[in-house]
Image (cartoon, rainbow, N blue to C red; front, side, top):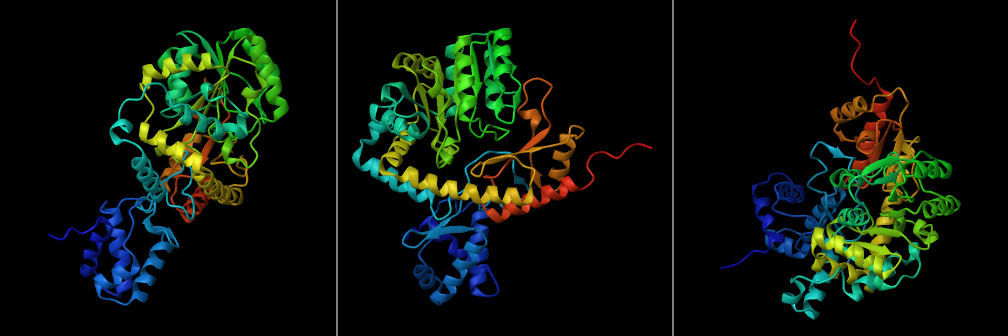
Length: 459
């Protein structure tokens, strides 16, 4: 019996197509992707193999592959092969998602190939039974050291014993707050903040207290007054490309905030998903504190959310041991295969290469947003921008009007602590698989904002 490889089975569809052969190949490929026969990352057969199997000229197949690449169905590079592109099955689904913050697909790199090569190498040098077993602790010394090296541009040199490997930032945040706080404790945060923080505080019965902010982040005098009034156990901040407002707090403001947090006797919980996207990230706010801080840096926004790896860094090994207890109660162990992959990528320089590709694509997409949404706020490398709206605007009417144009958006209500929050929308730039799809979505949004919005008055 001849077993046909998954990457070539779709060629049987070409025989049912009509018209020019190159166009029939493209249509068969597109149908196989949309119906799930081909998955993102699947390698397509070599062009010469396709020509031989279909009995056509090689130039016909070359033309078909070029057309598929132009349509965003595939990606590839010389010497690596051609792969089904991540998001190729979604671009024409009708609803373009601008609500989910994801790193954009890196141009010229195949995540599937990187993952395949790395796992093959790991399995070659590791006993699979041991790899897939439960692993005590949260990261081997080598894995913790890789995390420290990855975060060194933000945190400086840190001992591996102060680093934990967590199954994602959300688990890290839940473990940290459940370890540091008890039900009823106050935690200060920005008035618009990460929805996952809101979910954790609600689940743990913590009181989330909003601190007033300006264009540079939390206002020092306001934070001092809030801490004196609320006596918080912790202060939760995202000082670099803040989610959702995309603000970055300058170093001088970070020093002032650190002094206030230290004087208040509160813990700093610094969430930093985005700093590594910057060529020269600012020093973490935690670096201005001698103790009582926890720093969370995830790979989900800089490399891929599918890794499910985040690093938790503490001021001392003892603090790390405490947080490890909270993580153990939630997750028992980090994902062993993905932790091994992340460590391999960092050690071999693949993580830096992937980061550079993601950063370049993020810049290109941010430039599109600057052109089409000039009022949007965000740095040149930001994965999202904040679009302020007039005080009299009804964000939900705008969201509904945008949805009618095929756009999925999220408004300030998803991020707000309390009722008073500046109206606006977070526009995520990394979700659409192709840059052209993002450009179309941003044009639709600009047209929506320029037109009449909201219910018609009753007369």
